[in-house]
Image 1 (spheres, rainbow, N blue to C red):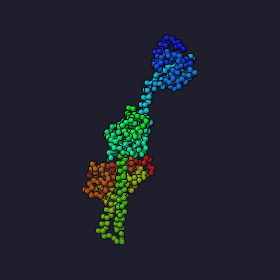
Image 2: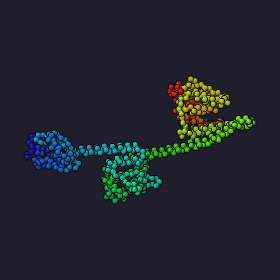
Image 3: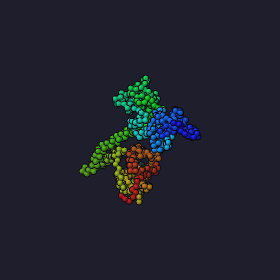
Image 4: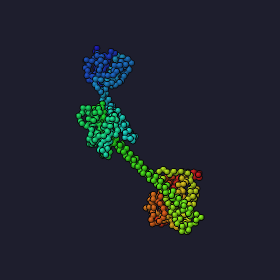
Length: 533
Ligand code: ADP
């Protein structure tokens, strides 16, 4: 067999091409090969011409190279495929087959570098995917155990991991406590449940706050790795978990199938451990806040329960004092002397005051406990004002105070409110206006629309409130000039007014000038179609 007959120009071009080229005839015998082919397969042209290509490359190129050759020749179609060179590990060839009637031209290009780059890109991509997967676990889960377990699952697959240990630092004992783990039995976990600082790899990491990467553990004499060596671990990475510069624990991953980690993998573990520390911080903070909130709620509930229990206990004897005092006052069969009458009146007055105080305390006790059941109804403002004035007018008349109802046409408006609470609000504000206004003063009621709300204003020409005190009057038990004025009161009324209004989506406020008077106002949402009931 002779070398294929080609023109000199053709041959010189083919020889200069950097891709390896073979030409074979119908019997698969080599008729031409270029220098690049010689170099790629360490062959000499003179030894190869006439030889069967398949035999020459036997054991050098893997896969179905021969079948592809046959297929291309039989079907007379160009075929392209990639194949690895079994003789030279990790080398890849891109193969083009160009068939003709008398044979095939084969073009082989070394694509090992491209393959390596592709693999590196894929690896990076995997790493990024793993990191983003890890972050999503960190943000979506709130239980450390769930976080560690799902993180380990992801990493285990990627890094061939078999175990993970998460120790948390226990301040009281100055030891590490195994909190979460995988890949060991519960019995083994019990044995290594506690580690002293400086004991084994995790103890050393905790003590020095420095990561340890232990490799080739199966052949190591290092005392620190003997514990994990006993578990069959060959490669081990342990990281400290830190929060604001303080040690909170350690996290370690181990493999019993591989002896070491690559730099990239160590970096990856490092990044994940850092993210994890931040997440654990978040979880600790949330559980601390939750604990404090629960404590505060418990304390509040206990206080409310105490108040309402006391109020109930006080109300029963109080009502009987009132009842018997009234019987004494009204008993015609044994009329009282004038002196006795005046004393019974004092008993009644004080008892009423005490009963109001008890009732107010009961309301305060209900606050925050959810016991205030607000019922929303469409309430016409003039009807609740009329009800309230019936109660207040006689008290005002005793002091010579006149109450002017100047609600005007807006009095027909409906608001969304609880009628019982609304009367309580009006009674509190009106009785305050009367209480804190001198004899023969005047109280005026007006109302106006403010966007979707109705504003009711109760103005008096009483003692007024200094500016610095105006906000405080809504605080529980807050009273101004309590001692000086000697006016009966508890300091709860306005607290209740504010609370009720907030529950009914309303607001409350005041304007006042000391010595001239005060205007307390409140707003409530109006019923949109105001004429309905
Ligand atoms: P009480 O009237 O039982 O003391 P409140 O909570 O109703 O309790 O009021 C708190 C304080 O606000 C009162 O003690 C009083 O000093 C002041 N105050 C309330 N209403 C008026 C008013 N119309 N004029 C002047 N001061 C008032």
